[in-house]
Amino acid sequence: MNRKQLLNKFLANQCSAEEAKLVLSWLNEDPTLLDDLISENDWMTYIAQEKNTKRSGHKLVKLLLIFVLFGLLFVFSNLSLETTSRFAQQPLPGILQELYYNPLSQPKEIITEDGSHLKLEGGALLQVRIRPELDIRHVRVLNGKISFAVAKDPSKPFIVESHQLMTTALGTQFTVDFDSESNNVVIRLFEGKVRVEHTDTNSEDAKILKPGQQIWFSEQSTMVLSDFGNKLPAKQSLTAAVSPAAIRTKAYTYPKTIHQSQDWLQLEETSLSDIIQFINHELDMPISYDSLMVRHYRIRGRFRKQHTMDIHDKTQLAESILQLIVEVNPFVLQKQHNTYVLKPKK
Image 1 (cartoon, helix red, strand yellow):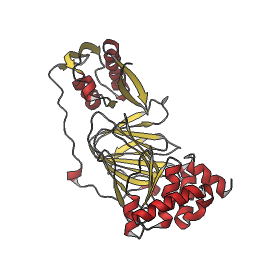
Image 2: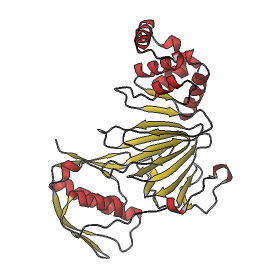
Image 3: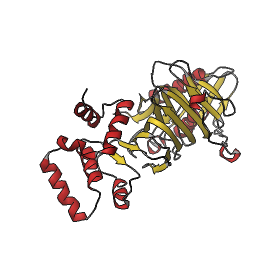
């Protein structure tokens, strides 16, 4: 594949992580590579608009225009000119995906539309798809180490995809370190709780991380869960220190209308909001829903459970409760990115 074919593939958002990194290195050196992929009329129209707004940064502006025309927002960060940096940070309307790349050695922080803080280490490449109207907040790590401080929203799970792993959080702090060359992934949790599983929906292998725990994954092995004190393979070792204050979690207290024994779970006229929060916190199953949609609905039911619940048992119990919810209420259940979405029945 020649350079022009790869550039077209990149603009169509069809590149692999390795191909995207190569294209980004080309564009960082010479943004004029894409000159022949945009019509002269479109470019002259945009230049006229830019002259009216008196902004500089010709190369970066042209690069951003190309991505707008192809339906992809490309935010090229940390350039030397202050005016072009301000322009790059302005959101462009009608874009479904944003691509962030940190070409420098020092970290760069971005704030997503939902108020989550993401810190990109040098060389990190990230695709973000977060909008208030979306059911799920979705991020894809294409390369490098990224720290997440997720804005708390129990009704909208925050999903981070990294190679073959999918990390789901509701509001928490964790890091994802993905080496696109070796395809190794390290996930570390500092606050809250996250569910980590394979992107393959047929895989039943899932793990729940608690503060102070980490997962290491390679294509040659399954997910390995351990504490921070345990050493990772040398190539994937992380040097960041963890302060005791950063490792904390808040216990969840479920409503008085929910009763548990060793063998049964009993719901007594429990609101759907309380039930969904119970599923989120106690059964480790994130559910996306509209809080206004479910606020007037209640259900009661009795469900058999195991004495000791592993992640598979919790998933089965959560699915049984959700099935009852959609059977007796005007809702439907969909599955997106290994996460359930509760929607009104049409």
